[in-house]
Image (tube, rainbow, N blue to C red; front, side, top):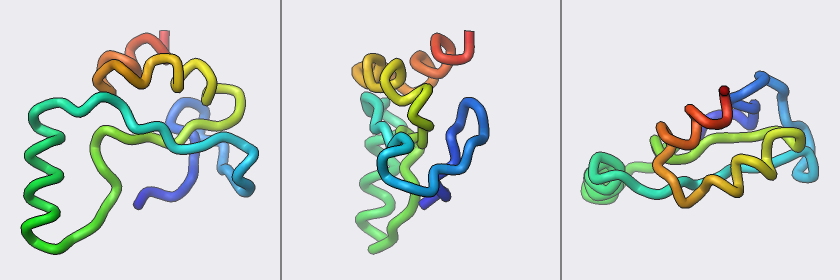
Length: 77
């Protein structure tokens, strides 16, 4: 897994109340990634999840029904 650092502002999340991990809607490539990881018995940070600090978490959570690339466009604009 990636360390808990906000993907928007690079703030490190040292405590659980400082933000969190958001899982976005899976794309077909994400589903393939899941299957490949499961088949190989591996774990890792999924390509459809990112860390967000407290400041960015709420907005990101509102967009979790979008694919990550769509959500990130909106969050970074």
